[in-house]
Image 1: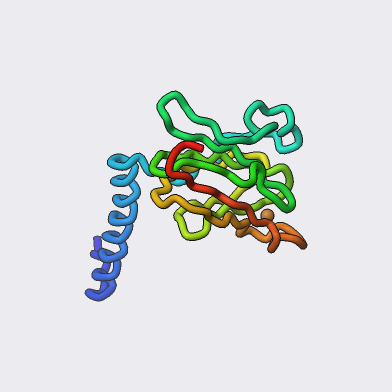
Image 2: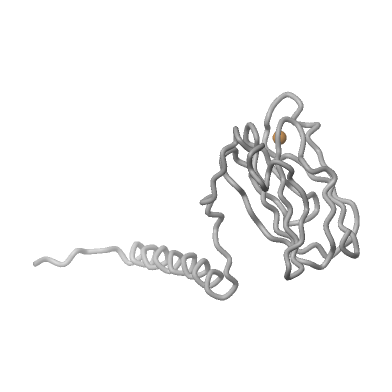
Length: 162
Ligand SMILES: [Cu+2]
């Protein structure tokens, strides 16, 4: 059988592409194994039309788990976040659980890494530890309607548990 002739430079690029693939997949695998960091799964669903019946989202609030970590349930809807303001302690893991009662919204705590898309029907979840006490602006960063620009909330990070 005749051997396929591959140009020298083409070979280099093929190998370079292969190395990049291994590098990128390896990075994901490494952070998954060592730091338990995974891409958002969107596996948890909730009925957006029946949030009033949900024990968690009918009266969304900040709660403290027995181990001292903090959970914040938040419902976004045209054009506000509930609860508002949100009060959390500094230097403790805070898990945000977000859902929407209507359209897609965003949840961004300005000046931090806290940033998620809020999709009706799903629960977006992430955990973050705020180290600097103070007041932060929460903005919706997905265009959601005429008053999107006014969809702003406040997050207060206290030195101690509020
Ligand atoms: Cu919005």
